[in-house]
Structure formats: structure tokens, C-alpha cells
Image 1 (cartoon, helix red, strand yellow):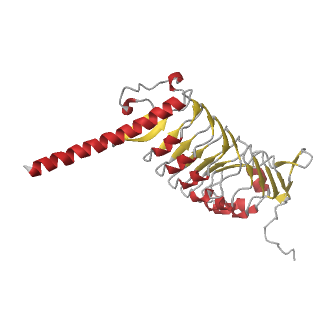
Image 2 (cartoon, rainbow, N blue to C red; image 1 turned 180 degrees about the vertical axis):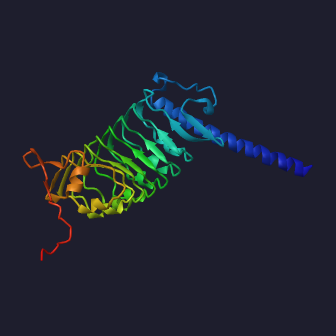
Image 3 (tube, helix red, strand yellow; image 1 turned 30 degrees about the vertical axis):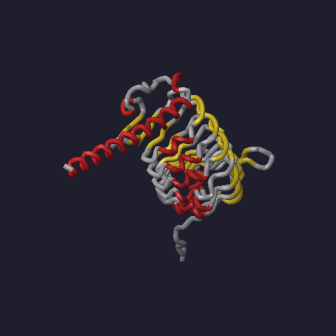
Length: 285
């Protein structure tokens, strides 16, 4: 009899724990709903129903693993509580009206693979805690009002394939750790206020297919090492202050043929190095 009672208590305890987990995730989502003016969303949640029925929410094993609410008229701020959804793998809030800063608590989402907060009104700097997301493959923060510098520990994102932070107000130099991100395929940092030089270590990014630094304040020599990136199919580093010589190969690869801006703000084409004719010299004797 005691064994049966003990077994029942264990089973009851297990169900209680599962219920608490479910309620916890639901409470977090309710806070998110309220913080983003859920009553005015295009597609609303019925808070009386189970979270597995809520549009844009994916639940697996009684835990929230994905939130996809792009273009749904979210207005307000991202609540810090969202960082407690520890099993979350995807957070897509693209094209809404979110404002305020990116909560540092999102750095707790260690299972996150996709983070898309693009096309909103987010401001302040990118929290360094984002670089704790070791499983992240795509980071899209473009078309916001983000400022400050890129986090110095950006290179911790060793699985990152897409880095899209264009059309913001990011300033300062590209951190040295960036050149250690060997999984990168797409880098879009154009239309910011980035400055400094581009390191020859860019040759480490061997998987790179699309590279855009268009419309920033970079200067110095364009590293010829870019030519070693065999997978690079599209590049735009024009409208910076790069100077010196570049090869014809790089000039042709660049979308705007290496159009730069001088100190007077006038656009000009960089000097293109004359490629050496490598044919063997034949004696006329």
C-alpha cells in the first residue's frame, strides 16, 4: 500500500512540475503580449486558450521553442522576461514597431539559432550578452536606430552564418574577434558609421559569399587578401574612404566599382592597379 501511495505521489509531483513549467512559459508570453500592445496586433492571441494554439508560437515537449510574429503590428518594448524562455530556438519580430533597447536578458537564450529584430525602432547599443548565444546562426538587426560599437566579443558567435546590421548608427572599428567567425556567409554592415581599417585577416572568412560595408567611414588600403575568398559572389565596399590601389578583379567584384568619398565628400573611383602580364617572355633570337 505504501508503495502505491509513494508512486501516486511521484506521478502527481511530475504532473505538478509539468504544469508549473507550462504556466511559467504562458506567464512570460502574456507579459510579452501586454508589453507590445497585443490588443492591437493584426492577429491576436486568445489568452484563455493553450499557448500551443497561439499564432506564431511553436511548442515542443510543453516548452516554447519558436516565436514568429513578423509584420504583426507589435508596438512597445521587448520585456526582459522574454529571456527566461530558455528553450527558445527562434525569435522573429521582423517589421513591427518595437522601440527601446534590446534586453540584455536575451543573452540567456542559449538554444537560440535565429534572432530577427529587424525593421523596428530599436535604439541604444547591441548588448554584449548577445555574444553568449553560441548556437546562433542568424542575427538580423537591420533597419533600426541602434548605436554604439559592435560588441568586442562578437567572435564568440562561432556558428553565425548571417550578420545583418545595416541601416543603423553603429560606429567605431570592426572588433578583432570578427575575423575569427569562420562560419560567416553573409555580412551586411552597410549604411552605418563604422570606421577604422579593414584587416587582411578578412581572408580567414573563407565561407563568405556576400560582403557589404557600403556607406561607412572606413579608410586605408583595401586588403588584397579579399581576392583569396573563393566563395565571395557579391561585394560592396564603396562609399567609404579607402585609398590606394586595388586590382581589377576586386574593382569588378565591387558593385559600384570601388567608388570612394574623399575628405571633401566628393565621390571618385579608386586607382585600379594594372594587372601584370604573366605570359612568359619569348626570345626573338
